Amino acid sequence: MIVLADGFMSSALLLTKQVLMDNSDKKADSLIYPILFNTNHGIEVYLKAISWSLNILTNTGKEFRTNHNLNDLLQDVKSLVYSFECDKEKIKVFEARIEPLDNYIKELYSKIENVKPNGKKFYSIDFSRYSLTIQGEPQFYINEFDNVVVDMENFVKVFNQIHKSLDGFASHFLYDYEDH
Image (cartoon, rainbow, N blue to C red; front, side):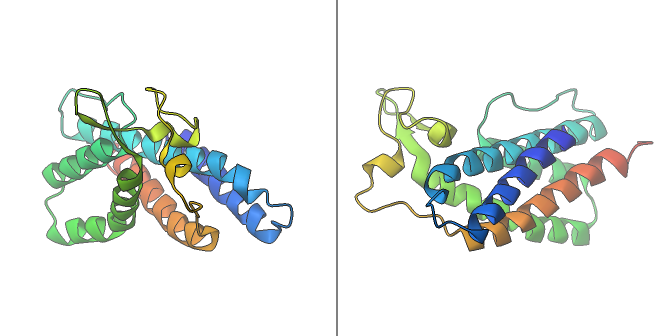
């Protein structure tokens, strides 16, 4: 799973860097969707890999959530780390390194919140795959009067950091406790 997650995150970063080298043909406008899809999918797979490893280490008998809810997956990882890790300094390092991902997910979810006919909120991570929700409603970027813009220079900076942190956590919980 770590190899898959790394591939999705690496491809998003590579494609973004390619766009930044030359966007004279405005390719960023269409490539942002595969970039964001790969980023979000990479995050999802990393979080599932970390959950799976921590569930083994904590003997829960679980694997990971099978949905695509990044916020729920991140909360699962946090909960598992807090129940597994006893060292307060390691917890502080974890919290500092996971904060950029937490901030990204909060910002993303503020954009992708939808409401079902029964009034229940849900978050459609499919915004980068389809222009309409499963209910046929336009995604947030269609409903915005102004263009929705992604700062690609900042994207590279932030997601390099998130990628490094997620890869480090996934590798740590998989390899550093092999004899556990």
